[in-house]
Image (cartoon, rainbow, N blue to C red; front, side, top):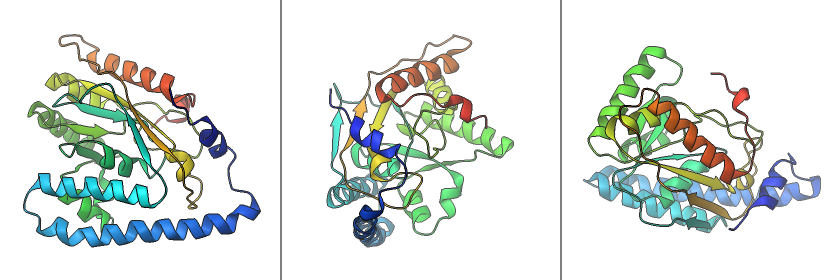
Length: 260
């Protein structure tokens, strides 16, 4: 089983050594130029392409191209084709995570993203045009409405991708999982696919804007099936998925650090 222990260890060391700063800065400028150029070039096509599937195929290709050109090749490990439909839940440790899932998951997936992103220039337009599902995390009534909407979406057989931690911090370690993805899976009888992302925290650490090249791994774990009729079904599914990701990620747990 390939490991990324060296990059993860380096990520814990904080800021780069002073003599590496100029190289990191040059690489970051290059990576930002590549990302911005391809993202802006794709926007006109995202506006005019008539079908959601075509727009998602375009962003899938752009995501793959961006990561390759930035020196961040992605290797995907999985045993079989993903069930259709299904709900993917992945750990979250970097701003790169969404790009990586967009580049590796089949184009039929819609991404569940915090509502604040819908107002970000360019990014909001892109995310809207590829059928992302925006959710509130701080407003109780809005969160409840969004949860019901996601449940209805799941019952229609739509595949979705979640980051159930909802956020990430500067320190490695898996935060607690919110229940929304698992409640939707239980309501729809849809399998959960736990996914482990490794290397994104190394390539773009949360505590700095400086990027660096490196290998990224996406490991898809065996599906987990809901158990209809079980009173604590969503919570049990959530805890099982988190335990599986925690064991494969090897970063430790920071559940106590997230009480929101």
